[in-house]
Length: 120
Image (cartoon, rainbow, N blue to C red; front, side, top):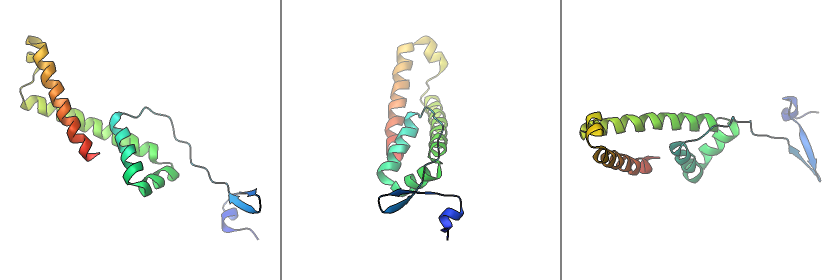
């Protein structure tokens, strides 16, 4: 009599005296993960191991990381734009005094990077 596992088309491999199920993780497409997606992956592996294991075994980890990376990048760009506007960092300033513009934009990015470290 076949087990329920075998009835669903799965197979076993004999290893010594034991039958081990032939389980594989679905293939995930290759993609370039940004810094924010990498931070999410590190967070999942360090603090949310059950969620990480569920996403990995269901084949949804790559999709999840891409979604997080894309959403975080959009949020990042939006916040930088709003902070630059609030601090008076404009294209006119960029044209008139490039070094001041670079300094202010670097400061905005550094502040935002520190804020993102605590939430990802």
